[in-house]
Length: 390
Ligand SMILES: *Cc1c(COP(=O)(O)O)cnc(C)c1O
Image (cartoon, rainbow, N blue to C red):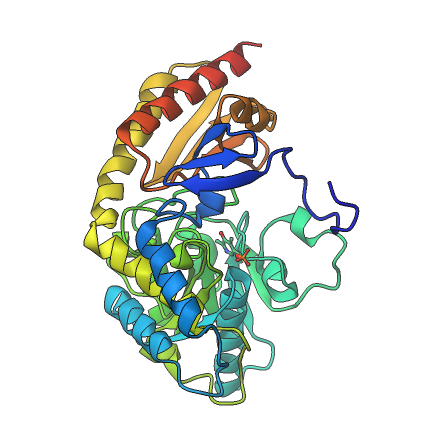
């Protein structure tokens, strides 16, 4: 709309004035059920009282001091993340891409310690890891690469959900790490077969590789566990987080297990804003609220129900290829491009997303009421059926 904004987004012609729980309101007072949560960010809904209060209070005391000094809330938030993940240490940053950059730098430094000169990180086809040069190079999507050559070197691409393809690199001495999403989000909500993450863990152990898990979209309860890799009872060596960690306040984190905790040392890495008091106050309020209301177990249960509701309504509809997901991360794949569904849904008061051209993606807020859930299912399945009949 503005000639002074860089032309990087294809935006929808709507702007929101305020939010309340699962609802967003535009300037004309129209209400929308938010089934995308600002791309898996506002999981606890909009204007959550506990989180708003924590941000407000913190802003009246202190916003930023820089990492030249100790930051109490940063330590506290790290303690929480370590308790929840069973890992060891945390580096705080401001976004998902930065969390993955940290992971990639850890892998490079790990290679350096092992005197591997041209290290390779195994990454997946159809993956998404961010838009900085290293993270776009790790991303498995030609559209993301296009026009940005030369890419950052050192990524070996294999098909997702294919253990043999990873195993085939076991004798490759340049490999130092595997970077994988437990459920591919931007790639179209692809849930790998049971045991995939567990087998990657075993391969990493056997080959002395770092297992690096991108939980930026799947983390903080989204799939019905605090972190999606916990569905398989494993612990990675490196985990990246961002999106829902601040419920809308920008914050990212790279979490390490013992094997990866002491690879970066003073002077190797840093950020001005990362883990500032405001962002950490938001993160602490998110975790406190998630725990207090047991949102993780709730989403495990509600996610199954929501997925089944869509299956009940759509499974027998001609043109539906697949309905899949985990927790509140759901993909409905059609047999044709369906980008226009986004605008149709908007007209009906539903905020949804389409990835990979043919997959409706839902990332609802956890706080959506039963009534709102029913409306979402009824309206959206109606729209999809109508669309497929045309
Ligand atoms: C969103 C996302 C990123 C990038 O996060 P930004 O905060 O946009 O940099 C990386 N990986 C995954 C899996 C994501 O969903």
